[in-house]
Length: 241
Image (tube, rainbow, N blue to C red; front, side, top):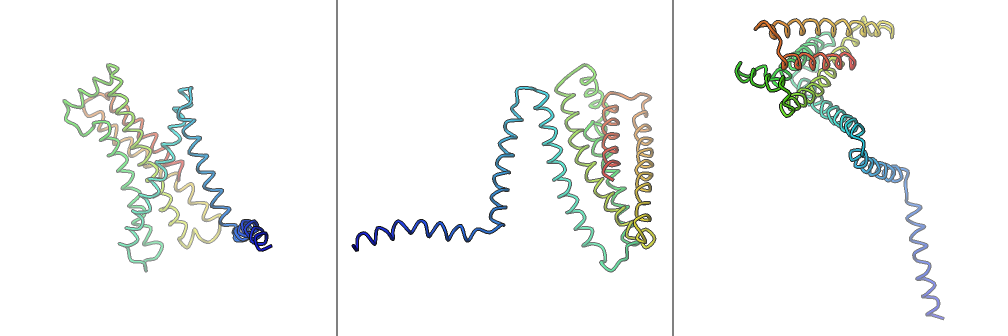
């Protein structure tokens, strides 16, 4: 009898243990488990789609992945820059005073887009080196052309998103001013103001690029690639704002 009772206790232990563990499960545990399974499925699907037989599917998959990574990197960089600026500024400043450094930061990032993409397209190289690289691209050197295109695309997407976030922050600060904060209609007037600002900045930077590119009387292939990528980056800034 003692052996049978001990055997029954051993058989009932797993059931009791399972019941106790089930009762202890919280909604948060289920959410974490579901998120883990979803992320695992997502990672596995990325392996499938980046090795798809169709080259167009692979290309677009990599473009989406690169855009997603650039957005996360831009958010982290912008957050770091914003934290540094907040530490440097007096917290007792009013919205009108805080707007000045925000607009200044936006203008500086507009300039950074021009400089970074100019560097990616050999605009700061010596005239001999620049002419040699432009000749390679014009002659159909795929390695040089793809290198310049990838550098321009990478720098353009990242710089455009950071510039867009700084512009959103600046015009968000504009909405905090007393007149714009009166009502939703007043706050909505910031949208066309932001559009005019982006349009004016695009015209100004385009004029500066044309003057620099046409300094020797003609625009080579590298300068055309530079101009094209800057226009695309500024369009992305306009869309974000």
